[in-house]
Image (cartoon, rainbow over all chains, first blue to last red):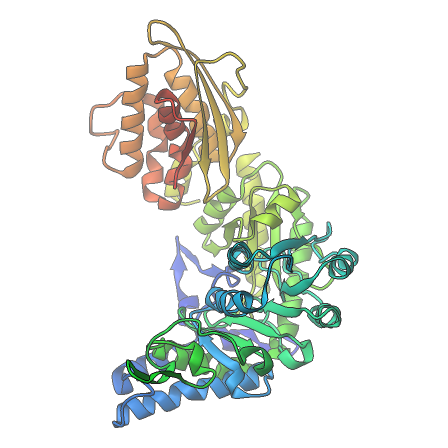
Amino acid sequence: MKTNGFDVERIRADFPVLERMVNGHPLAYMDNGASAQMPRAVIETGTEYRSRYHANIHRGVHTLSQEATEAYEATRELVRAFIGAADQREVVFTGGTTDSLNLVAQCWGNTHLKPGDVVLVSEMEHHANIVPWDLVCRRTGARMVKIPITDSGEVDQDAYAMLLAADSVKAVCITHVSNALGTVNPVRHMADLAHAHGAVVVVDGAQAVPHAAVDVQALDADFYAFSAHKMCGPTGIGVLYGKMEHLKGLPPYRGGGDMILSVSFDSGIRYNAIPHYFEAGTPPIEQGIQLGAAIRYLTAIGMDRIAAYEQELLAYATEKLLAIPQVRLVGTAPHKAAVISFVIDGVHPHDVGTVLDDLGIAVRTGHHCAQPVMERFGVPATTRASFAFYNTRAEIDRLADGVREVIRLFQ
Amino acid sequence: MNARTKQLYQELVLDHNRNPRNYRSMEVHSHHAHGHNPLCGDRLELFLKVDADGLVADVSFIGDGCAISKASASMMTAAVKGKTVADAETLFQEFHAMSMGTLDPESAPNHLGKLAVFAGVRDLPARVKCATLAWHTLDAALHGHEQTSTE
């Protein structure tokens, strides 16, 4: 099938897992919000590293170590260009989005928060952008305050402006794209307001980076976190982008090798430069190199083309599911990424998930690590189909048919 | 549908999900517990009236959950009503063993009867806790624990 010149069949051929049968049906993988699949180029990059130049980095003078170091550090420049950062040193490698956000909460929060300060956290945040702030607020005496969301699943901008004006807000924590609702937040607008009040903006970009071109400078984000495994890369590695002005002066995140220049019991410890200063210990080297391969792969297709195609899928899936009277969408913001969260009258999402799995359709069911969102909409859980650029309209037809089968079974 | 899923969502299960038995709260009770499956968000509240002879004179539940957890709770109440506490405990042990795949109700002697309809969850690890939540809550209530969780 070709849509606006986007040859999805050719792209699908790059993903070995899409040839798989699940429970007697071709796999229809719609759990990309949890983890996206890997193209052959990313898999083979890992195999090549393992079979040809597996070695520790930043250490040896031998050939393998140098090759590994070069390949790993090449990813830093690829990430910089991919997200429009000004300087490679602003790209810190972490274990993933959760790790990135913990780094900001601990290093920045412990340094800058004091009793009476406020950290604003949107009601649609993933637990990873809530719990680290709760921890640091308890330690520092600062307060975490919720920015409410509206019935359509958007940040209540009036409430946000009032919260900023009322308190001594030091940080605003906001997801770029909601994993549970699909909402794309107006990060630049919110950052401008936050900056006018002297607050920094910490953006969870896990669901945004894989699905549209992201420019951290255009967003004016102070910190921006994301994971490799949601963008066709492996698990175990992620990125924290931070403006150099904010990274400078922070205390170390973790201590160990690689983050130091020298260690002496007599003359003390001298630390390495940013970003290595935040990267103690041997990193996930293979995964870092694979992240580079994933960025090359996505860039070759083009993030704008990916975004346009996924918007078509979103519109098609929305129309197909809304045609089923028992289906109610959770998250109806006008500006959404290709994520559809829904509930079916009288059927629990876990039963939906089991029956869809039976039909070879992989969706996520549950609270999506965003329990405040479930609370806000008064549901225990939802079924979520989250699309990637390798999904097709035919798969969405199967999803809609599957939902009809669920309804037939349980009602 | 595949045989596995069909086996799980048998008409008996679908019926208990649609029309759960003993679905009500009970003001005057001797035992009571909350069950929670944090992974799914399933919640149920169980009430028991155990008489002086150690018989479960009445049992009821309220709560929200998937079809498996609701039907399992409904069938649990139907199964233990009128039984002794000791017999109810035996059923809990057997149901638990069946869900974990260590008791095959088709080959090993047991008292499960209709409850064997849930044997299929042993092949669906993600759903075992849905089926056993009501039984863990029963066990907690009988032992005087107010809260139980599958995690």
